[in-house]
Image (tube, rainbow over all chains, first blue to last red; front, top):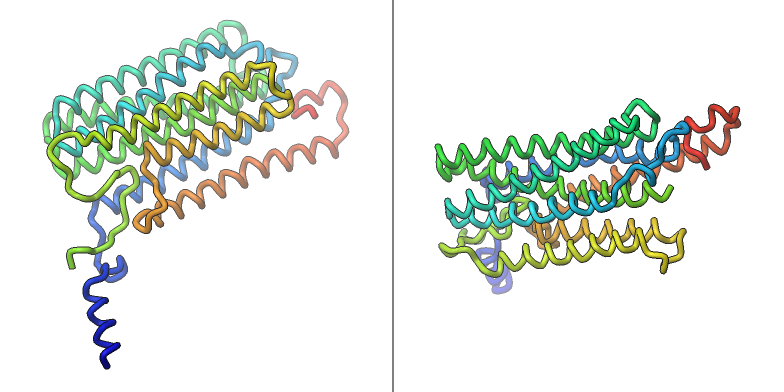
Length: 210
Length: 131
């Protein structure tokens, strides 16, 4: 009897397990749902990566990765995206402490770095197409433009999203719904950086050695 | 009832209430992550261009560096931890990584076998992976 009482007392003080606590707060549900979306997005990218890896040598007599890729350009792009991920994290911290000015400042830096990344990518694509190395030249180049271009489209969508979010902060303020969307945006931006890590490693650095 | 253990949303550092100003330790987490990521990136570019490393090992080295940098991003930017409140996030991530591995490794494996089992006229060969 004594033992039973003791266990009962312990149970009262211990954590209530999630299964007995009722629905989780909406922020956690939304964040987890967006996490699942991001993982499915990464699975989609894995298919494009697999296609590139299989076709990387299929140059059909055209230019190879070693002839086309400019490593300095890629390194600058990497630095831009990495630092923009950092400033996006700073923006998240400013949001969690409700600092409007810091939120705008770090969002602006994130946007500028993302736009600079995108400019370098478009510039690279344009110069490749001008050299006759467009996506229709070989299976290797089709796969290259698909996987890198798909990441570029994601970055473009992220930049538009960031502008919309800053407008929402300005008009609606830090209300819970806006807060959740900003959480999702930060997740999206960091996930894009992870995909870029694999892009510069597999597509540019290893792809140039094949 | 104050200690209900909900999961943590991915990307959230902590659910607990924060002080009204930017927490220096939180900035520190991101700064450590940025520093590590920059070091790993620089190492990747060095490995790709150096002549000090055995050439067939370079691709493997680059893959290892990318995996390490992915881990840095997950821990310091996305705040994925091994804590109980992160179990669901980690399980979803593990499943995603599993599928990614199956798709990439499986494609390479199958296509290499196909190429080695098929004989084609030389002018068709360079439409496919050459090995």
